Length: 111
Image 1 (cartoon, rainbow, N blue to C red):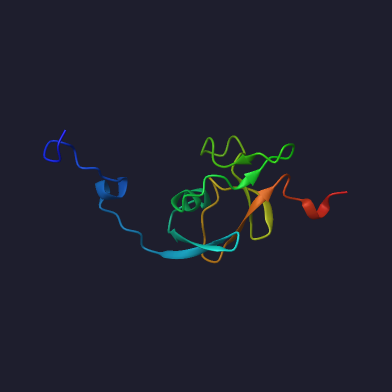
Image 2 (cartoon, helix red, strand yellow):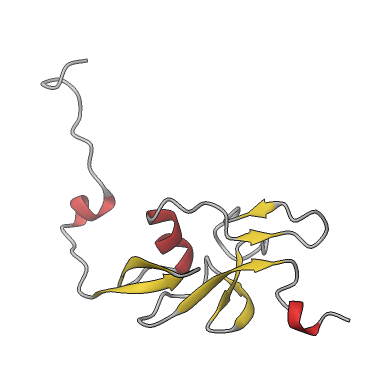
């Protein structure tokens, strides 16, 4: 297929003619990431090419979004010092500080 016969690649935003109304940065593990109104924290991380932001309790295996609808709990992050937040469901907000969650997210409470 050549360029004349191939369909133009379009994003969902192109199809509806939308444009973000608000943009800001979100802090993630000491980095500033661009965020747009309406994005979840998972969407902000995906947009930055970050695919894993949690480690499992047993083997410290990396995890990120799996189901994308809040059922599996693989996408847990710590948001503004609150652990166990589902990145796929939590809307990104200006000034949020998001950190990778290790294990249960309660390391300071470990006995």
